[in-house]
Length: 553
Image (cartoon, rainbow, N blue to C red; front, side):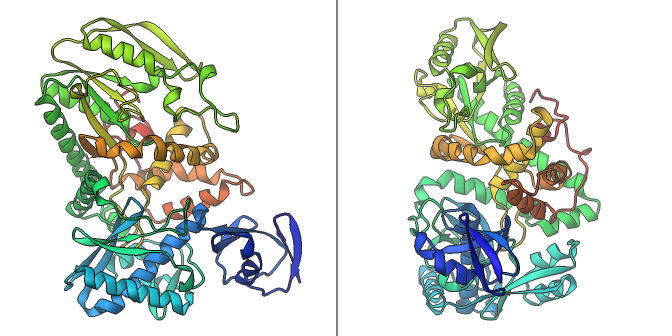
């Protein structure tokens, strides 16, 4: 017998009892299906069995590990159904390109006439598999065998991926004989994957899935609310193809072949070209006096604002970069979270009234003394930095709330040019395993926080959910109001960030709540061949995080 402690209560179970059996016993206490468990802080799938005394916790779709497992399993189910309906002989490959809203944009390649009728048939087949409760099986194979297996399945991006894996074995999942590899865990059987929808869209289709705030409801797809974002994401996929680096395996091939420096130069040139295009559009309308730059945490807004300023100078303008953070209220007056910690994500953390007073005065041609916020003291200071706007002067303002008109409510709409910046990762692990944009930003922030603020990776991971909640409330709702969007992600950066992030992640104690996330990120970074940073230009956005930038960031 083994003693299993659940919610502080110890119960005895025979060794060999599956976690699914235990989950069924406790399921009535949960509104959503139990999808995964943790044993002494380690995630485990439901088919695993009790072997020793342990502490057990359940995860449902309301939890991050649970909803990630659900999404992963739903993608696998969709792949199985799509291959069955279309026929493997007609499919070159099916790629999960990126997430969009509450779903994933899927693009099939091959001899396929994609119609809503075909998509409906795939959906019906998925529903049939759900009703059959087909077990999702897992087996471990030698890495060389995995390479051979995926070559046979014509999943060449997975084949490339495993050529650079140092582990000796690989977990292969299967549904009714259909085999695939996924980064992360799966649900026990297809019966758990009850909620989804398929919608024909653009050159592919959307797989719509529930989110953790409501894991039993599939949100409607509203493409009109994501038009600009979709076009930027598609452009990112195009960039990946242009660079011949769409997946980690192809990036590792470039690194192993000694072609990283060339890749960096091309990537940076593409970004500079885009920044020049944005500057040209601003320069064509001299009524614009305020460039308002917003984006989520660690999107590279500060470096972008400096690089844009240089391009604006090339357009004959005189830009002045300003950080909206310099208008933070003094820390003692900052809003607080329920736990008593300061909340720097809300608009009320800024002195909106003073910001509007200063900006209105500048627009009227008056001279204004500009503030500087000292993060060490938590106070706004004035040190004789005076500014007056001339005919060719323009303010380049960056901050998370800059697209929200409540921040700049006194400024005329025609005087503002809005830019949304985010790190929209164009690189995926392989055809079916995408890299979440949030992972890239979290790793960026972790590295920067350690370098500039002396914060541990544990601190960064602990506060990340609060940051993400702030983004959902105060940034993402305004992204489509931008005049232009800029993707700050670089295809090579995770190979560089790896050398900085891994030591920080290894420093997180095993017994801490953040260890589970640290372990996930370490496994993720293990896909990449690490490289040094010496070839990265000093004006690169990546420098904002690893150091060595020519800008004050």
